[in-house]
Amino acid sequence: MTSKSTPESKGTAQLTAAMVLSGTLGIFVVESGASPFNVVFFRVLFGALALCAYVGARGWFRGHGFTPRKLGLAVLGGVFIVFNWVLLFQSYENTSISVATVVYHTQPFYVVLLGALLFRERLTAAKAGWIVVAFAGLILVSGIRPADFTGGDTTYLLGIGQALLAALLYGLSTLVTKRITGVRPHLIALVQVLVGIPLLLPFADFGAMRGTGAGWGWLAGLGLIHTGLMYVLMYSAYAKLPTAKIAVLAFTYPAVAMVADWAVYGHHIGLVQALGVPLIVAASLKVTLAKPVKVTLANPVTPVGVKRPTTAPAPAAAPAPRTAAHAPEAASRPATPAASEV
Image: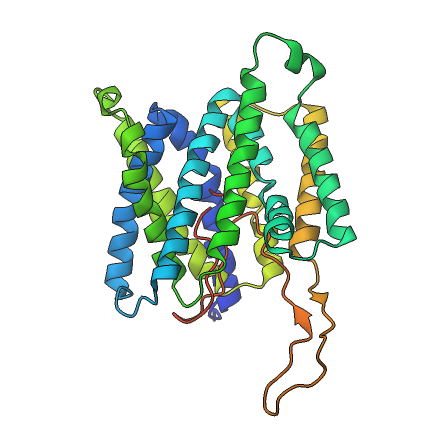
């Protein structure tokens, strides 16, 4: 007699599958043979079709919850997300899928730093210390040497910078999007990919797509699988899982990306670079799973019948998007993978 799977075990399977798909993203990008701008343009085009079909089938266009302000925030988040993808895919070309993915996984630390800088969210000494540890790991993983700054070929250095800037844009999108409440994350994701269509149209080179052949299959896969299916799996999983498990499973993404890069292209990071990976992983988990900071209220008087908050929620710092959307009215968080997703 077999017992029915619990919601948490189902969510674990869904998120693991989504992160495995994320790890194969770089293979689809490279095999498409298209330029980064063309790749992202067709990703958002096919992804919009997939998400629109799913949202329409679930009947979520009715009572969508958008207001002009919320829609504007979703659009702004979409601008950051679209160019975040362009920079990440350019980084694949200039470094490798493995290095670019691990460097890109510094997203949580940018979320914390930007939150402190732009919104005065409290940055504790412990978090600051772990961020320093993470960037020490980043230096190791990047493999940058002093000669890279003085040599004639700065392609690799440029690729590292592109991955870091992509992570920064992801952090900005996270901070913007987490201020949208009462809207399903699928709808936010749909708005973000729809924004990318007119935004990238001036940069797309359709002439270069002649004779693409099998590359169209890889491009369609990026939209239908790595945007449509992957987002559906992630958002379904997030509603079933605790934050700790989400944070741990998120590291399936870079692990699969590194294995895939080695298996398909023979790329692998060196021993010294590998020493930086556990530093980034440990620091990310410590920052993501940090306990809420207690806040002392200035006014001790609380109106009758109103509960007075005693803690401030910790800022979002997940390396991949997450949501607490159990219902349409629930708060929504960023609608993108690495993460990324990516």
